[in-house]
Image (cartoon, rainbow, N blue to C red; front, side, top):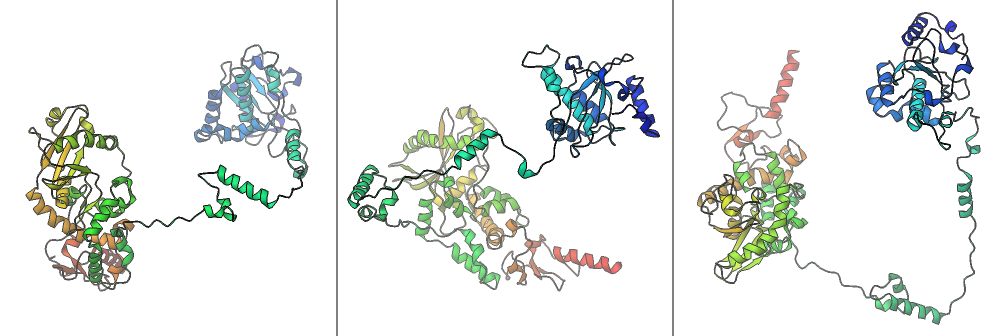
Amino acid sequence: MSSDYISGVGGGALNRYRRKLELCGLSDCPYRVPADSWQNDPRKWPPVDFSNIDVYLLETPGVHTREAMRNYKALDSYKLLESGWVQTVRHIIPDDTTLTVLRADVTPSFRVNEPPHPPWAAVTQRGDVVAAHCDCKAGLGESCSHIGGLLYKVEMIVRVGGARDPACTDVLCTWNEASMKGVQPARVADINFYGDKPKEKVVANNAPARRADPQPVSSDGFEDFLVSLLAASNPVMPVGLSLFGSTSSNFAPKKAVVPSQKVPPGLQSLYRGVEGFKSLDQVYSAATQTMKLDHKDVERIGNVTKLQSKSLVWYEQRAGRITSSVSHSVLRTSTTKPSQYLIKSICCDRPSKLKTTAIMWGNEHEQVARQQDAEGAVSSVHSDLKVNNCGLLIKREQPFLAASPDALLACSCHGMGALEIKCPFKFCEMSVEQMCKEKDSCLDQNLELKESPVLHPNATSMCVTGASHFLVWLPTAGHVCSVFPHQEYALTSGPASTAFREGHIRPELLFRKVELGTEQSEHGNKQGHCSGGSADSVPMLGCDDKKCTHQWFHWACVGITKEPRSKTWYCDKCKSSNTKRKRQRRQ
């Protein structure tokens, strides 16, 4: 950089540059300092670190933002250091100030054969950057990438060497030497991207291999080789031996294994079998026929699904059926606006992803509870008791009801019954007597099962099996109590479950409106009434929009209990469209 740099700067730029020199306490421009006055001794540099660089670059106008500084290695200023474009850094300590002025030549990254830019930076003895300058377009009033490259190189040299005395193999000046001074352009084909050793490996690998002349083998020798290979590979034989006549007889094809028990398709198959019907009555009638099961079907499903949550068939057969785990939610949800999540959970055949600590602890100790307490305590009051694994039990008369008890009991005195096992993680450190004193315990003070939502899984199991036992297991002890049919629950659950199945579960299995998020199905568009029930269901309300796709709606489907007072009534969809028409007319 020539010493007449100031003479080439005029106007407001000259005033800003002079204020920058006054801020540093410099009486003269660093570019006017003779070249032999600049020293190459990193041991005399201030301890510049990343915090000093960040503060200066963020407070100075430029491209350096907080988001960019978090990934400083992606900045152009740091890439200048990595590419070796920052040359030797030198310094001076002017007599009229305590600051250290650092300077280096930085080669432009995209104009490598042009003269380099000479940025300088004034740094205090603590490492704080007071000011910096570069002769590029952005360096006069902003922090350009050349200034950043200079500061990053100073930080790297200070961090590697510091102020200690260098060893013979760790000389600081060698870190400060320029990486490259000039780059000669060349064609890509002429550039050597590899060293000599990788080239030698490539040449050695590409050398032509020496192939030995194959020696002819007699037929007797080849047959002996096959026999010896067959004997050595027993019991697992290589399939290649089946291609030769002398050894192919050892490979006899196995007969195809035909499943002994073929279960009927799940209720989700109703969605694929709707296309051929023209009316909802035909669809509902066909769905009712498909849901019917005989004794053999119920028995097959129970045998195949004994692994319960570890069986995919168990999830497939549960979909669309009201099981013991959701029976309480079915009774509590609204009949006109039921829980969408409840409908999805009933009709979904995918495994549950819910794995809490309490659920995992209960699953781990369920088998222990069955072996330690169930078989011993229950067998004392039953004759010839057998505790068997239980799959999905479906009530043949009401195939939309199902239960999966933890075990199935069979005795000569009472017949068949279900066993529900509960391992409450919350009371795992208590005894059974202490647990009964808690408000949220499932047992009362008399060690009897409370009439609470916990009873509903057992009640549903009793609807399917006819009897039930309830086991509460804790690490200290366990307690088994008998559960008798609950008359009030039986009177309310049956009609409520049937209504919920016909009004919400069956339409969802047929059209999947909730799962797909559609307002109406294609089959509903072709009919003159909504898909919430039969056309003969009363009472119904008619939409006064002639373009309505349904025309008639059940009161329960639209959430009303009495006839509207207004002379005209529109459904939710037609109401929004009519409102838009009125606005357009007013405009």
